[in-house]
Image 1: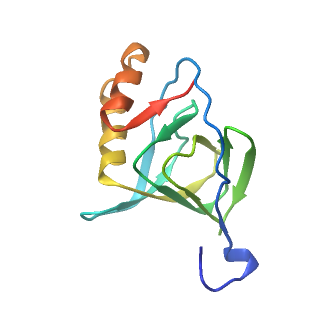
Image 2: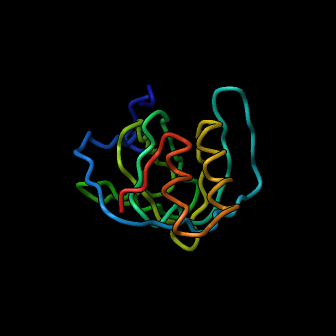
Image 3: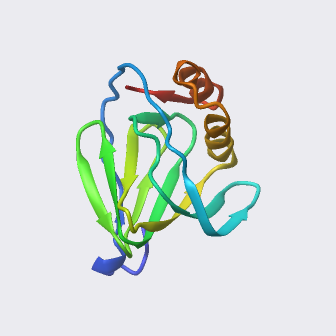
Amino acid sequence: MLNDGSESNRCERPSKTQIGYVNRGSLPSMNPASFSASGKSFEIHEWRGSGPATLHVHYSDDEAWHVLEGELTFRYADRTETVSAGRTVFVPAGIAHTYTAGSDARYLIVLTPRLSALIAALQEDSHRSRQHEIYRRFDSEVLE
């Protein structure tokens, strides 16, 4: 949560939900924009484009997004929410999620080096039949 308490800077945190298991998923390409920084414990990147089309979960890694322009729509196991510019979403490890970006969306994504490596592996091998195994290698799972 942001500590200034202002309504426009509220941090959205999804409620914990039961995770369901279903079939396949795929990952569309993510388009990096202009800002990128990596450290030992986390990375932050300015991106455009949507995340994986399928509900998935990272068992050991948190993830966060801050919308700079446009809107992101997040889908969880139990609900959907749309977040506009100036808002931040934090998804703790263990929460099933996915997101789509509006055509004009630009956002910062904060992720761990393991999640960055997962994304790189998925972009390198986009064959659907291998995606479940790739997610498992990074302590994550495709749920549909």
